[in-house]
Structures are given as structure tokens and as C-alpha cells.
Length: 360
Image (cartoon, rainbow, N blue to C red; front, side):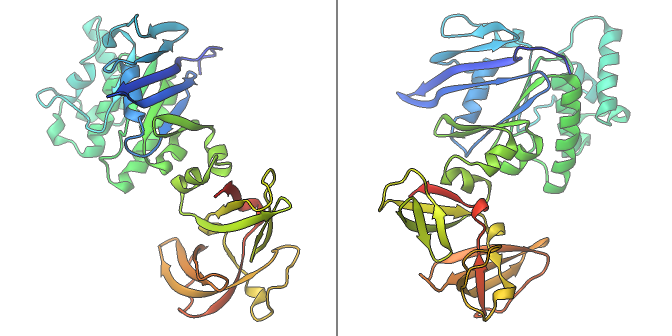
């Protein structure tokens, strides 16, 4: 990786309004050479508009974009899109049907013919398509077309690569392999990569850093591990996985629940909070069956529930429980096959360190 102290791409206080409404609102982030940053969020949150502004096909109302320490555009100055050293990959691969694979990859290259051909052959070899350089796009599979589109985007050696949902058109089994191959090649090329997606799994698999977007704003930014394990609010938890929620009242900075007390620092007495946790962290206490809800040091307080439904999901089982204390439904995921019968009573616990407490 190139050792540069400055970011390859800097986005500063970007704003874009449509009909007076800010669809991109004060967005800022930076990407270093060789780094993959993912703009992650639901459809319509402003991800693609941000990418289009960086590419130069959309104009911002406020803010600046910098590349390698040089201003690319603000509200007055603007470098044309074709001069920004930016590679683009979109959901549809947009290959030219009348050009061969080799000619598609060479399309944006300039210079001597021999040098261009060597660059094309090198990239096609890296994506495993050298043998198909004389074929036309219609003769390729979807995965092969995606690889050609990647090679074409990388051919001019862009400093910045923008990718807008580039894998959504591929089937699930092929998608993982293509993602891994793409990531490996992008790292070798040392480009700063901005990946736009609405799929948390894709962001976790590919990104060095995730910027979680909502309603035009970046609400949280950091490494995938931190975003997943220290989400900023209940919506952030729910974006990455199913969630269970228990509502509780705070007394003396403690939230009282049938599972025991949870720390709720900074909340006044009487405040209502949501205790949020993922299904994989709802645990079945087999040792406590028939012994009642007495707490133990390892598990805490157990609450009784009745199995409502159990389903095998392939690598895990999903069990839905109806809680005795209020009739609510909580979900648990258990590795492998575990299919208790509907109506069976069980005791459940939740570890304190796997729970998040938010204002209701």
C-alpha cells in the first residue's frame, strides 16, 4: 500500500437539496489509499446521490470534495468528471455489446497501442478472463460480465473507485466469490474505494470502515466491528439484524425487568427505556428447568416462556417464545437443529454485556 499521510478522497460538509429538502445533509468522510469505505443505509437515504456528486454527474449545493489534497469541486470550482481520475462501477455493468471483452476494458485507455494491450491482458488475467478477451459480452455469464466491468473501471488506474450496488445483480452463491475477488484486486490497485450498498452483510464483508446513513445524514461511522457491537441507537441495531426489545422503567439508574436489573446511567427516575438485544443472545437455561427463576452468577435472573414456534433455518434454528410476564414474543437463534414442541415451557436469560439500553 502506498504510504500517504493524507486521504485520497475527502468529502467535506456535502449538502444536496431537491425542492428545498436536503437529501444529503452535511455529509463528511475521508478515505485513505487502499481503504474500502461503505456508505450503508436503506434505499432513499442519500447514498447514491452522494456518490453521484463525487463522480461529478450531480452538483452539490454546499460542501467540497478533495482528491489527494487537491480541490475537485465546490459550489464554484469544478473539475469535469472525465478529469477526476475516478473509476465507476454500477448495478448494471453497462458493457458495450458491439465491443469485445478486450476492447471494453481498453475503452478508457490512452497511449501506445502495445501498452494498452498489455494493461488489458494483465487485468483480464487477474480477473481470470484472459482466455475470453476476444469474446463479446452477450457470451459471458453475469459474474464474468461483472469482472469485465471491474477490469474496465480499473484500467486507467483511477485513484478513486466508486461502486454503486455492483453485486446486486448476481445470485447469492456467486456473489460472495466475486466480492472477495474484487476486494483483493482493489487492494492491489491501491485505490480509495467508496462502496454504496443497502446490504449490511456486504458492508461487513468488504469494508474497512462503514458510514451508516439515514435520512441524508451519516449517523455513525467506524470499523464494522465497532458499528455492529456499539450501535448508536435502536435503529442501528435493527439495521444489522433482528432485534428483541424489552421496555422498562428506570429507578435509581437501574431498569427493572423480569430478567433482572440493567444499568441505565444518566436516566432520571421514571424514565422509560428500551433494552435491545439480538436473537442469538437470548439463551435457553436448560440447567434451570423446573428450578424456578433464582439468579445465578453466570446467567442472572431467568424468565419463564412458552415455545410458540420453532423453525430450522439451515445452519441454525429460530425459536419464538411467548413470555409469561407480559405475553410478548421474543426470538432466539440456536446453532444446528433444535426444534422444541409448541407449548413447551422453558427458562430464558440474557447476558448483560450483549444488551443495549436506549431511551424509549
